[in-house]
Length: 446
Ligand code: GLU
Image 1 (tube, rainbow, N blue to C red):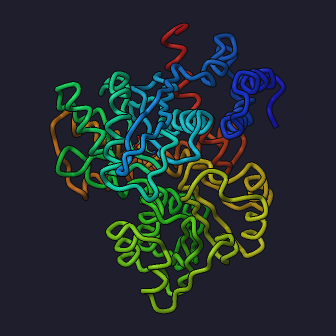
Image 2 (tube, rainbow, N blue to C red):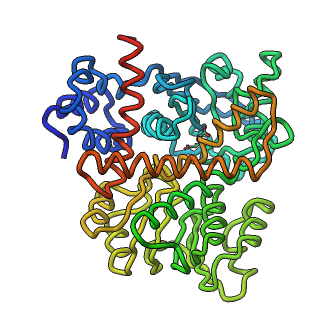
Image 3 (cartoon, rainbow, N blue to C red):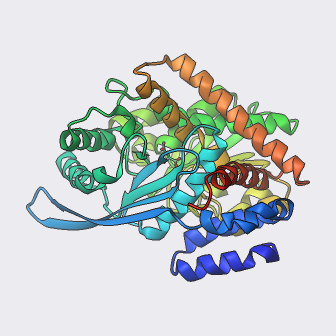
């Protein structure tokens, strides 16, 4: 429920952003948490901080023309939504996926602003991407696309202005082509302008692993704080991209047993526990589908289609994409005995799923807290670039673990302070909002 004082704010967001349901959903979830804050802080209402936070500072939309190997010309659309720079330069990934439109980028940029605030590092929020579909495209085609995108995007970036990274469809390979083009156009080796770089040209160790590792660390903290543990619990992790692979790796190291993961073709069920070496070989080295995993692994089965959330588990970690876990899926998880959910992806659970988990007393870690390890390690990459330094894997992983502990504590304690013990959604939204809002008040009406 949205507090009546904020109803008008939400109505305004709907009016100003028609046809963008994911953005409405992300804003609604945050506004539902903030009623108690505006009652306590009338200065935020006077300064219209919530209205301002819901309106991106700048939105850039541009044409991205490129040529396929067969000579055909293609036109895609590029986006960068620079959402909020109260706490630092705009920071957030680029997503390449055919479903991307302004509403996707806006919802992700909004979430990113709050997520980045939770890290307690000096980064504002932004997001970008394109409706370009990398599936089935050659290396040369993806490189030409990246170069064309950067030929426009570069004028909006800078290590003190806006610092993109990867997201779905954008990894170290694409960041390399984007960085190469930025460097060529600007004639500057400005390492801190992009994160998720290769580790031999300015990238931080652990950045690749960080989102998944961070989600596992958060999950462990949450279970411990609630008097339980990961020990030998059956876990299901959806997806099989970068976030899923490293969530599976760290959950396994921490004592959980991950029995299923998925891609857009279907679900792999591996009762002995996912073989992480084989998963990396199939997905990272060969860039193949999960059917290859099932073929190579004795005891594993592949099911085309169907919902991964039908696989019985005690812990669910959705790491694929937004709204992948429905109300029906949540009911299935609850009836199978699920006790905890940690969102590795951005907004993977629908509002109905969230209601099901809340009323069943399932521990729920929202993405803006649980998956903040990726962007936090991007901020550590920026630190290393600014000081022309290079940290070890162990040092960086220790920093990441500390940051995730800090995020957990902020969510947990803020929820308690506002009388919502154990509600990590409220805790995350309020703690993040207060950090951004206080900086905005300090800067005056800008
Ligand atoms: N795309 C990632 C996220 O959703 C990482 C962003 C970054 O490292 O800047 O947080």
